Length: 248
Image (tube, rainbow, N blue to C red; front, side, top):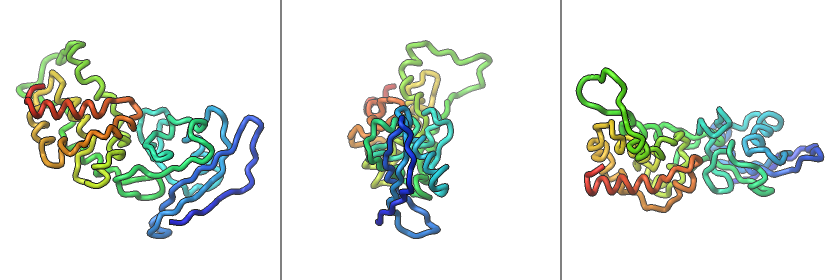
């Protein structure tokens, strides 16, 4: 893997400073190997890493490819490895990252170009746990009511924005593409413990497979990586206990 340096003369205003972005680049139309490329970018005190990436794309190299949308930590599209840790580039301040910032695509998913990965396996795992309310009988004539206490039982799991930061921080997922991954288990948790849902046993059987919840090694990487602060490891352990005692 080679390192290329792209450092034109950069004008820096009095209220700005220069940081170096060291970005892992990959373009299948250029070659089979990834390379590292460095860019010097002027930033202000309140800039997020996404702002710095936009500067590179808009003013230095328009071929740089990465996903982003809302830029407010809601869509989850801009997950990437920042200084070796999964984060959303729109939520991380440049001032907290040092003078040289390394940026790579999230691990465990095929890189399509630069920081863009193939999310299809991630979404397939998500769909496999039936992420929707399962009920029997006729459709209700009024809203399915739920107490505040019952809602609180799975509230943490509802915060997921499907950014894949948790799943792609998992060492098991890096080495076993068949593993459901933390995010799918968290979404299963959201429905397993929903008092209105009647599909808990079905989901537990799905997660009881050899590539399911038992593959978790409790490293807490997923919890540390979650930009929404979800207690991912706790949710996984609660699903394991539900499987053992068959009581939700």
